[in-house]
Image (tube, rainbow, N blue to C red; front, side):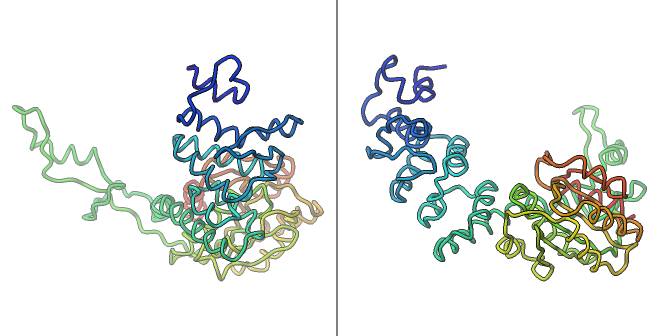
Length: 379
């Protein structure tokens, strides 16, 4: 590790052994930018603060007290100029999550400078109740930008999974890359092999036909909006919007904590859904499932996807009875401990196991995996 990196690791206590960088150099600016944030660690231990970004004396107290919005704008500009993008995003995330510098998102000018990503989206959803009218306009624009990018990434995968399986006995004139038949193409063009050039000339490229699917199923997506489920709430809203855009489905969307809200009329606009979500609070899964049971019109053509960490705050016997009743009615039940990009959840395994005994399949899936599961269960 170089001396410069050691200085960044050790912070203000590197001066005695490693000397001071030249005033105004990038190294000095990097150290000041990091100290502006991470010096709060020393403040929490009763250590006197030091100079922050721009030469100001920062109040190095937990929770970000003493940091004005203009100072944060200047600090953020320094971070994004001096550090690689991935490093800058980590520092921004620490500022929000570890040190409570909510001025980063409650000040419109500062919020405009943040890199839109899923972590920022989670923070905006958690704190949107504290945002002023001007900041909410900026926040909504950022939320839409992140959601549209997430939808763009997921929609193709989901549509391919739901459009049907490849028919490997028939070919189609439709040239879709995902349906490419490499073996059939080679066989069809063997007569065009050029021995001299040792190459295969492709006079005809083959693509499999994809079986059309008719899935006249109702999909009920029931989402736990407690704070720990923020990532799954985001992906559930986007996934429900994608499914709602497919004519073969009728999608209902319900979010809950100890109360519940039916957002089915907004399902085609994930941004509108997310702006209505209230992260946090307790959890009453049984109450939510009893409501969802009232939405079932054709049990044998209904899939209920429950997205939750299974940390039930209501009476467990009531939850078990609700699941048992839906299973006995032959509703297909899927309990997802996570529906996001990583599908690596923390959840109550004991309660999840109890519901599995009553007929609910339990999993943690990405949206694309959920689409594949829907294909399997709705054959």
